[in-house]
Length: 298
Image (cartoon, rainbow, N blue to C red; front, side, top):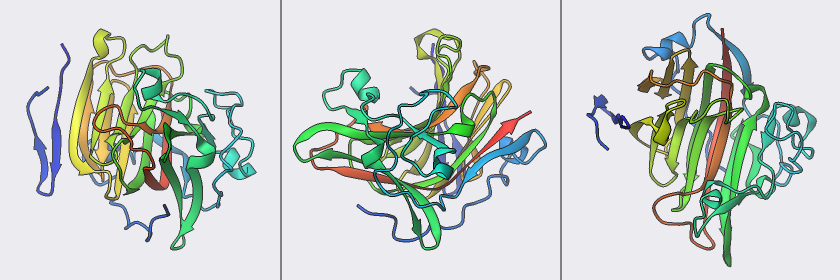
């Protein structure tokens, strides 16, 4: 039986529940709360077990259209997008144009395909850089134009810490994020997946810790009560036998059951919503990310 855990984050603190089933941002984001000020893995993230492996503050401008020609050595740490500037190409890969998103793979009426060339760009905002992810559907209907980004140095890792700071600056129904750790080899690690942040962009932020090797999609589920439309910092802290989700430096989910022990890659996936209203013709939504960081674990 699936174990469901609900954790709600309120202004008064953490409330533990029982089991139950455009354009760029106008201003730079406020300074984030330290991700090392909380408890548990938040404090551990500064320990000698973690070593900074990758960070990007998005200070190299990339115009829309340059995240293209990405079908090279796909799904490996050697994958790259040929049209990117050399320094950015060394750090980032995106799902190639035409790949189906999750709604497409599952036969949804309104679904999408990945289109990084039309969805992604990097620009300075108030002296700081931001990565912009703009999902859209044409006025004539058709597919949703989805986007999934992968930091190359954070592919094929076993354990680590994965952090980003983001906000949905333009919300609309029908668009979602599922920023996840996904197995490098599905066959070697069945049902391996850790999702944080996940949810429809016009709704709340959730976390899902899937149980390795367990049939029926067993998972632990965490509701934070936070909205995508405010600035937040999220962390996935993955260590042997434990995965923790942190929101703005506070632990909001901790799973110890069926924790994956095989290599996974961090994927910043954004696509068609799988529940709620579908994306309307002519609609669009935008997510802005001000930095990402990743640590190895030893």
